[in-house]
Length: 233
Image (tube, rainbow, N blue to C red; front, side, top):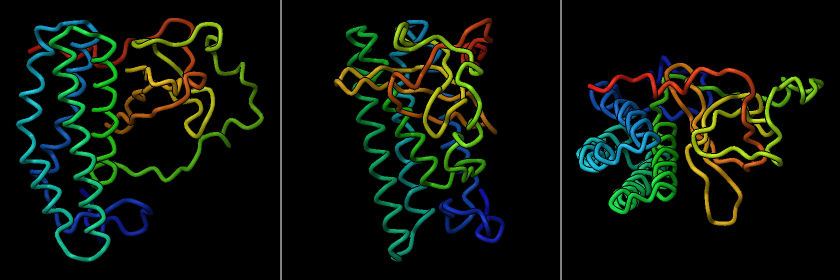
């Protein structure tokens, strides 16, 4: 983590009150577990997926300790950050319970949605908690693509052939236009949105929930999502 002095001039990034290398690294280590869970879930290895809820629940004390130690004062900023972090942890573990239930029924679509919500709330915890290894204050990438024809981004028309879970996609609209990733879940709530796990950038894989019309399947030969390159121990 950056100290307050090291982080001077980086806008918008919460700064923990002191260096918490051990706790910070343990929480960042959850990212690897989430990657392995994605791999096993997408390969429908239910015998392996069923082990993840207990493994992830063991991190409850770590999240609690980081939340209380990183932002410990009574100043309004720290109080607000603690509330936000506790909310994200609560939603993460509620989604983990939904994953456990979906796994017991081998309900793949429900498991994908639960995993997507876990990923989203964990990503928000990292961001709000100042745990990103970098901070990108770019508001939108769309200006970089202004004047570039949409056909310069090579993809399948999502209206004719919408992306499904496991499809490699490029975002064709919105503030992350041009970024690539993989669909990890499709929401069945009528919102017509999907969760996209963006490709790794500086060690971090950010999560976006976007309209399905923004996530277009990439054309041509593609390298597999990097979670499928993680060896099983």
